[in-house]
Structures are given as C-alpha cells and as structure tokens.
Amino acid sequence: MPAITFIHSNGQSERVEASEGESAMLAATRSGLDGILAECGGNAMCATCHVYVDEAWLERLPAMEDGEDALLDGTAAERRANSRLSCQIKLSGEFDGLVLRLPERQV
Ligand code: FES
Picture 1 (cartoon, rainbow, N blue to C red):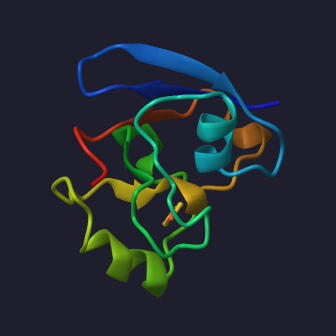
Picture 2: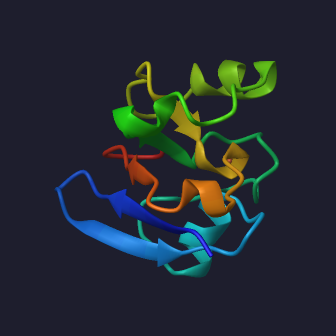
Picture 3: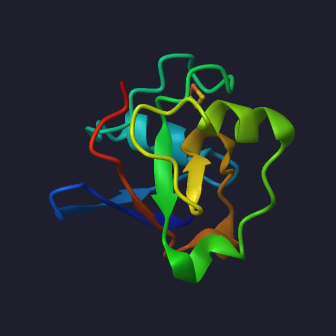
C-alpha cells in the first residue's frame, strides 16, 4: 500500500496511506486532509485538487493528458512546472514515498 506525504504551504507535513489504484486526491480527501477541495469529485473539471509534485518524483509520474494540462492553466494558485492535478495521479506501490506540496489556495 503506497503512503504519500502532503506538505502544506505552511511547511507542515501529513502522511496518508493510499489504496492501490486510488488517486492521490482520493487518498487525501478520504483521510480528511485540508488543502484539497476536489469540487468535481475527480472528473478533471475543477482544478481544485492542484498539487506541486516534489522534484525527485516529477519524472516518475506518467505524463499528463491534454485535459489536465488545460485545466492547470486555470488554477487559483500559480501554475508551476511541477503542477499536477492530484485526481489524475493514480497510485500504485511504485509511488510509495511520493511527496506532494499543496498550494496556498485552491479557489
Ligand atoms: S478533483 Fe476536480 S480536477 Fe481533480
């Protein structure tokens, strides 16, 4: 079971246990983590599940699809080179230890 770490914008970190195949967004919201709103429920329509992927992990994630790329242009917080939508990051054992940073705001 992959465990991922979310780092809040204030530097506080939270470790979340995820189920195999679950998205990072779902693992976060199921665990009651603040900072991921996920207003569209993971349908890649809202961009309120924005995260910054730790540089060490960036290359290891599957490439984003066009829809995710377009939505990331509308995030409330600044889009960066390591921005992703956490609902589009599907977790498996190989992502154990993944680190995701949360933006200051989602709306
Ligand atoms: S939950 Fe809406 S885009 Fe990810």
